Length: 122
Image 1 (cartoon, one colour):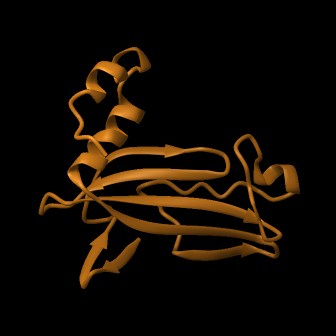
Image 2 (image 1 turned 30 degrees about the horizontal axis):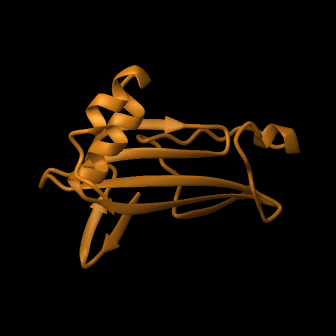
């Protein structure tokens, strides 16, 4: 997926994937550009105008699974079938925000507290 933010183009195909998490109803991927900038791709799934919640799947509504991932992202908005919609957006992150997400998603919970002390106050 490509997006232009503040006049610069960010491309998931050109950036390194730091982590990729896909839940039934949404997804979240963190990327690092060759220039050292961080951005996040967030995805959401909607059925009949309602965003799916954690634990809900499109199969609950009679749709077949369409698997998107960091290497196969959906377009910014994709109407896959009547009533089923995927949305994705790219969001720029500071180094501190990227570090906080890495601590949250990549570090065991027992170590998160001590490591959070190294983050700047928000």
